[in-house]
Amino acid sequence: MKILVVGGGGREHAIIKKIKENKKVTEVYALPGNGGIAADATCVNIGAKDIPAIVAFAKEKQIDFAVVAPDDPLVLGAVDALEAEGFACFGPRANAAIIEGSKVFSKNLMKKYGIPTATYEVFTELDAALKYLETAPIPTVVKADGLALGKGVIIAQTREEAMSAVRSMMEDRQFGESGSRVVIEEFLTGPEVSVLAFTDGNVVRPMVSSMDHKRALDNDEGLNTGGMGTVAPNPYYTAEIANECMKKIFLPTMHAMNAEGRTFRGCLYFGLMITPDGPKVIEYNCRFGDPETQVVLPLMESDLLDVMMATASGTLADADVRFSNGAACCVIIASKGYPVKYESGFPMELPADLGDRFIYVAGAKRDGERLLSAGGRVLGVTAIADTLDVAVQKAYDHAGKVQFENGYCRSDIGARALKALNK
Image (cartoon, rainbow, N blue to C red; front, side):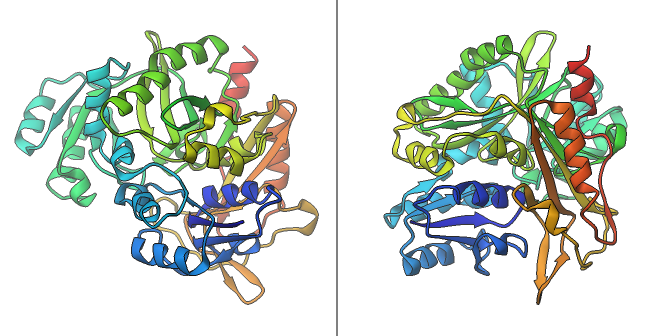
């Protein structure tokens, strides 16, 4: 089988490595991929948002199955365009991807169908938003409506911070049209949990839970990033909470999308907070999370491609979806200065004795035989073990063997989870 994977980050590298375990796979193309992915797939310099070129390439190579991984092409209708030309795809169509593409849509969906989430207000006018903030409870959360590279959410600790966030989105257009509408919502408290789930609109098959570490620096300090590391499973996500989430969040979301004529087929990401009042939805994503994918897929015991194909064909109920009882830890190595200003282009050393099974390259380019850093988050190093403490130790041991100038990582990935386990 010839497989096409749209995207070029660590998430796509993890997906490609897992897909290649299927013996039916003869060729994998990554559009655009990156210098590290090139070791596992044929990278083609076609942008993830260049939908006409993606479709033309799929036709040229007579692709058997396509995986559209990032949010932008999903929201722009890449799956719609590929399916219109007869290609089987993993990923939601544009009318379902709106669940991530518009926070206003997703909040209104949850309100309409009684899915637990934070209380909120939507604003299209700057003055109205600022007036509301004069008396709104503080802290509060300000969100740009549309996609903003994971940076469109501000947790404001003061009224001034909240007003500044609204101005930057609505007046300065920091995120372009994504900030033309804003959601101002209640600040929730409790541990956060990420749950990725396969769904074909008929059933929901959750993957192992995980815990992301968004802040750039140790002790959850510094700016928000795309994620500095993850662990799985998340110790706060107990069997009892999992059952509650299935009944009150996962299945109701699937049914709500069906009722709206927006059947979701693909990977639906639930960003949850376990509040004193029970689990609530912080956000939905319409695709695999990054870097959650780098800990979830290594723990998957069943065949990813088979599950993806069953999801696309609406036969997920009959698919084998299994995960190990072990644990995984992913440490992201980034360029110093990320997520603001950083230098790249430094040669990377990936020791041969490390093995590359669980090294996922997010930002790198080839220079002859050399691999150079080429982004903020450069790569993720994942380790799996029977227990989380061993997985964390192994991940840091392996990360210490990866060398490039200007590289840094947090030293406390997994610390919160281990503390919760040892209570």
